[in-house]
Length: 348
Ligand SMILES: [Zn+2]
Image (tube, rainbow, N blue to C red; front, side):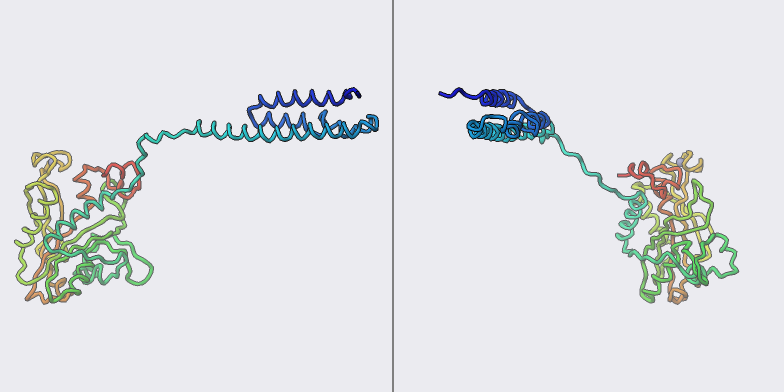
């Protein structure tokens, strides 16, 4: 019986040791090292093939055959172990990233209304109940509609009250008030009665401060028809103010001046902060100025398409930012258009 050549014993030992080592491998890196050491080009197994000519000729087929078997066994074992290591890695990953599905979800971030939009919507709702419709007019306006047709001719001293942004082109301005909308709304309805509210952004070339901005909202109210009186105006505005401030607040009218109304007045409401006793919000007076109003000037009625000898009407204008400032005790108008999320998030 031919004795087993030494090299075959060696190969069997290498195989046993390598398989033992493979069993203990837990990660991909160690697996790659094992592959390099055991099956790499300069490994003991592979060098048997390159050095086969050193063995006696009659033994070469046997040695080659055994070396091949060893190589195949090791390769198969490597593949098997590789599968196990991969699966373990996936399990570990799942374990590490475990989701607790019983945790409460995160609330998605939702937007909310701007404080001025909230006030505007309240105002719309109150006037809608009284039969007023919303009319909107454009932001870029002609001198004619912004001034002339509202009884403010070029030489009129009242033009000083509106520091105006002039846009390129003859007589084109950014509207300084919502009053141009009065003309549009009346011309649309005349001679049928008009009941409209006119909200919109207005622009004035002013020094920006805590009390004045170059852009702000305005909202005007107009009612035109036969036999509309100052008493109708007072009743309508009183009803509105009481619903807006949710209280039976007292109001008062003070004489004032506007070029497009005659007579003109300012409406004050009793300070709802101090109840009329006097505080910092009302500056000690007990009253808060809330809007300007008056009976429509005959010239404006005529420009709107109504015969002022037959028809009459009233108009009132207010600042939604100012109302919002009073309602929320906001002290600086610049917050409204400053886009500071900390300010905006306070209003739900
Ligand atoms: Zn007060």
